[in-house]
Amino acid sequence: MGRTERHRQRRGQSLTSIESSSAINQSFHALCVKLNEQGWLNQTQLSARIYDSTGRGLCSKRRSFHAGDELIRLPVQSLISIATLQTDEQFKRLFDKELFDKDSRVSFQSLMACYLMYHTHLNESTSSGCSDLSAYGKTLPRTYSTPYFCSMAELQCLPEALLERTVAQNRQIRDDYQTLKALVGATSCDCCEQTYCQDIWTLKDFRLAYFAVNSRSVHVNARQLMLQMKLKSEHNHFRDLIKGDTNLALAPFLDLFNHCDAVKTSARLEGKEYCITLDEAPGGIDPYSQIFISYGALPNLKLLTEYGFWLERNSHDYFEFKLLDIEQLIRYSKSLCSQSYHRNIFKFIREHNLDDQMFVHLDDGCSHNLRVVLHIIFHQDSYFPNVLNQIAFGDANQFDNVQPELDYLVSNKMKEYQEFATALERLPQLTESGTVARTYLLECVRYLGDFKAKHCPPIE
Image (cartoon, rainbow, N blue to C red; front, side, top):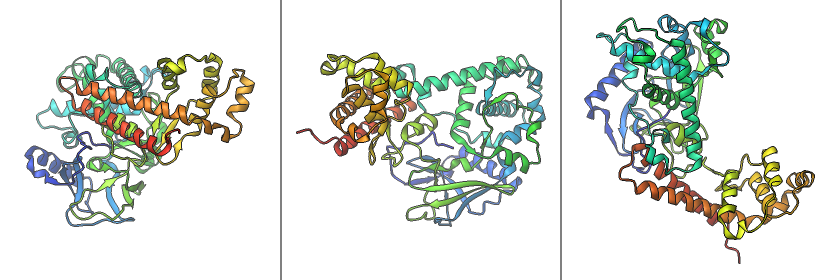
């Protein structure tokens, strides 16, 4: 679940009724009517509203909430899940099981994106809007603010950490789209006689649908869900097409809940309903105040690249370094590049996965692996594997001598991210994704500055 209209640099909680837009009002009214037909009672009297700080969100006009209170109960049949796809005979007919290839599978997320596109076209190609997802589809955002949607000029101003994740997402999306395109082939729509993958489902549409699923889905136990719907997992039509699990679902209306790091919530399947309970909420939640849930203990990099927003002073945040950051630090530092570093040292680090979990945390300080790597590179002369092994997995106290290098590494990263943020600011115009990315970079600079002040005292 996620909010793509979020503007986290504005922290005010003033709100405007959703009735300010008749189109939005109509779409959510239609969705509530549909959910009511499926058995949703709205026991907690939830209402959708527009908030300055987050865009769309949920509140209760009459109720207050405290730890232990239930926030929402949705009928299982209202979830869009593997069970939904399995019972949609028309959609299943698009996929010939004989063409499934174990070496060309797609993620369930991509298949769900395909399902959204299928129903979007079904709704648009018929005057009656006969799709069961018609009401829900009209509530989905039309744009997303993840770095994936940055312009080419903006992408050139992003650091490696963001580009790496964006490239991986692009590869996943393109590969799965090509696999789906090959499977559906030249199959034509019964309503308009256009071919799905040549005339109807464009790569652009698939990208938007992919991020709709990515940013708005909830975790469910697929096996438990299938049992609840009296379906057998072994009879799953898509079993040989999907790579990975199918433990996600789209949850209409529930996906309007926004994320906050200060609250804790839990979700469960209970009988024929999907429920979310408030576990922790400092001070409780008053009527008309926005109700937040937790998407998990997620750092800002994850929030940005998956959901398109970040949180100011996120309590779950940390900053991760790559071995490449240290290599670049050596390359561009006159004092460090004048020294010799045997390639066996870097080979040893990679082979023993010491370059994983290299991060700094505002409260906990520098991670163990980052200290080990800095010590091995800068404070010992041997490059023999047996000696390096004794050092790397020896007494942890020996790694306390890396403060100067840590200070240098953090300062260099602050300078780098500030330069990237300045480069973005100098562009003639920024997309929404570019704007969010720029403010994220500045938040990283602030975070690293706070870390440096707390954990890297000046050397006398």
